[in-house]
Image 1 (spheres, helix red, strand yellow):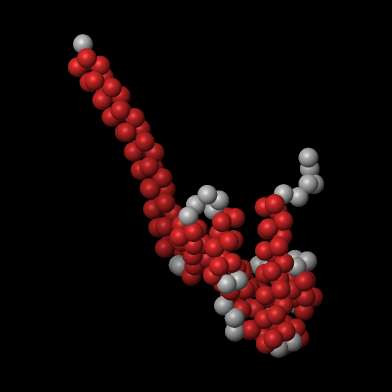
Image 2 (tube, rainbow, N blue to C red):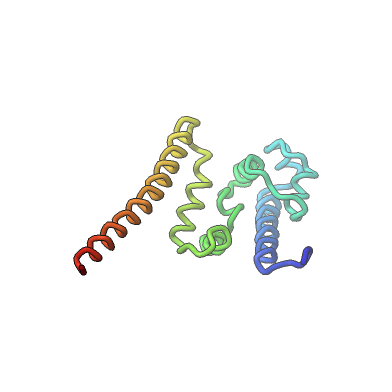
Amino acid sequence: MTGVPTQQHDEETMTDLQRAERIKTAITTHSTYERIEEMTGVNITTLKRIASGKRDVYASELEKIAEATQESPVYLMFGEDKDMVKKGKLMFDGRRNKVAEAAMFSLYNIRTLKDDEIIVIAKLIAGLQAMRVSERFFLKDLEKLRDLKDSEGDE
């Protein structure tokens, strides 16, 4: 059935609204929409749409708002640490909290790296994936050899 909200959809919507509320609070606590517009270059209408949850925030806008309001961009995006873990559970379903936290940390902080460093990381990931595939095939071959040896020993 299309159009039927799921629990995950509801949780994601709630997370988006909580993010909008954190951004709104940061703006109104620190200054005014007009002043934040001057400081960030983000149009006041856009700021209000972001703060009301009618529009999601782009990473570049979030960084500017965080700098202008002297808030952590990680806090504005994910909330407190416990909220980040909950969001991580949505993003990395079935993984332990430390894995989800490490993945979110990596994804968020990759923006601080130089282009060539990002390319190196991509190659490392591709190498790890290839190694894991090779290991699976190698283990299957070992199992076949072991089974063959066991069957020869039984005869």
